[in-house]
Length: 489
Image 1 (cartoon, rainbow, N blue to C red):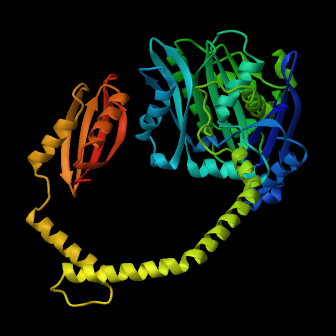
Image 2 (cartoon, helix red, strand yellow):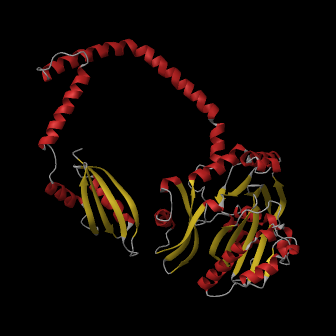
Image 3 (tube, rainbow, N blue to C red):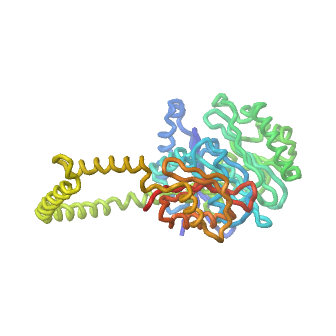
């Protein structure tokens, strides 16, 4: 059983950590820490070293021991989109979301980690928030934590941590509310937003402002460009849910004396603005400092991970797996040494037998070469010479069209091996460089797998692959691209 839940909010200039414990009253904050990096470390741009040092100090103090640790990736490095899909099956959602995001990504799918947050399900349709982060950014974050000794249980984003904080410590009705977290990340204001309506997430956004004086208070960091983006964001959300937000909860590097509530009330049009933290009047929020709200939300996410909630580490090797692998290196090394010794012994025992067998095979190859290529002069390396002669023969056969399928034969072979009971509509077909490709549509992902399997059994087709399988313009049609290698097996 886990001893607690830890949320680590990692910034460019500070580390904020919160530990939650279960009690009869529910989740309660047991420990909360905020540690700013030394200015010399930040100015020297040695932020990774400063972050590892702070994390290692937390680990030495017992943080992360027998506890679920939840962290974020930098939300400015995350691309996301709200998707409406015509099914509710979680397995299909996991298959389709990456391809739905593919056109929006400036990177290849293999270069990103993709996951989704399920928003609403109704009438056989599912609304999800699909998100992608570069593998380089994701693996760098996990590597920093692993080097500091932490095993990560879940990797998410700040906006979802805000929603988790609202659900655990504020939520009391189904009214539409907005949440905002303001942070000065190395002098640039970073504003994390999310909107909740009827206990469902209906919008997220991150706004990065222009770089300010590092010592400037958060109120001064909200310049007109950021305020204009905030104003537009709230307007769009209220149009989507067809009602105004009743309250705005603000957290981060804010205080009542900075005039944040009145400024945001004027900007957003939401008159009921609350600073979440010690000065809040919202009861349980009084237990948390405003700058620690994200860390509290992350720790709360460690208390449960229902299916359909975003976790970039879902299908990755977590830091816990890496730590276990590290402890197994000793046993693995011993095993490898034993295998190596056995291999050496086997080589020594069978060396003479293999040498004798090699001489017999060499003599047989020489005899076979002379019988097969009697017009060729004797050579020292018969196998290499035979290979060269075979290549020349194959080129002559290819030029004369020997053992090649004609176009009618290819079409006959393709038609005869398409499953008769599976609807398929072929839009394009091409043959190039010994490969056949076709663009087609069918009725389901299962039909795509069935078509691939049947074509794979054809004696003249090999290496059948499917790519770009996605939901087409019509929800009941699946578009795919099938490629085959031509030639006898």
